[in-house]
View (cartoon, rainbow over the protein chains, first blue to last red):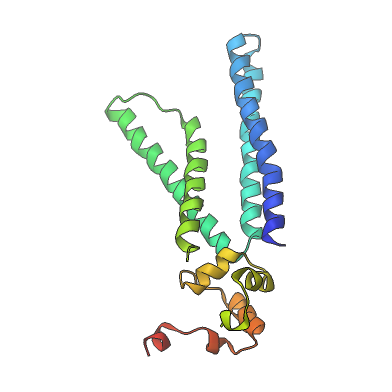
Length: 132
Length: 61
C-alpha cells in the first residue's frame, strides 16, 4: 500500500467521524439542556461519541501500520508526545484540584488536547527530520 | 550517489516505495532505515549494502 492510499483511507474515516463526533457533542448538550430526555437516554447518547472515538483510534492504528517506516516513526513519536502532554496535564491539574482549589477541568478536554498535541508533534517532527 | 544517476529525491522515493520525506531524512542522516529498506536501497542502486551505508566506526575512519 502506498502512503497516498493510506492517507485516503485514514481521512475517509477521520473526517466524517470528526464531523459526526462534533455534531453529537453539540446534540447531546442540546438534548441535556432541553430536559426532554430521561437520564438513561442521556447516558446512552453520551456514550455514542466515545464509541466514535474508538473508531478514530482504530483508524490511527491502521494508518500507522500502512504508511512507510519513516512516517511511522514520526507519527509514533508525535502520538507519544500527545499522550505525555495529556497525562501530564491530567495529573498536574488533578493535584492542583486536590490541594490548590483551582477551577475544575473536565477530563473530556484531554481528548482534544491529545489530538492537538499529536498534530503539532507531527508538524514539528516532520520539519525537524525531513528538512534538508 | 543519487545525483550521479540524475535521480531526484521524488524519483528515488518512487523506486523505493517510500515518501520523499523518508529519502530526505535518510540522506541527511537523521533517520537510519530498517534492514529491509537498506537492502532495497542497495538493490535500487545495484551496489552492495556496505558501499552505500557506513557504520559509526567506518565513518570515523
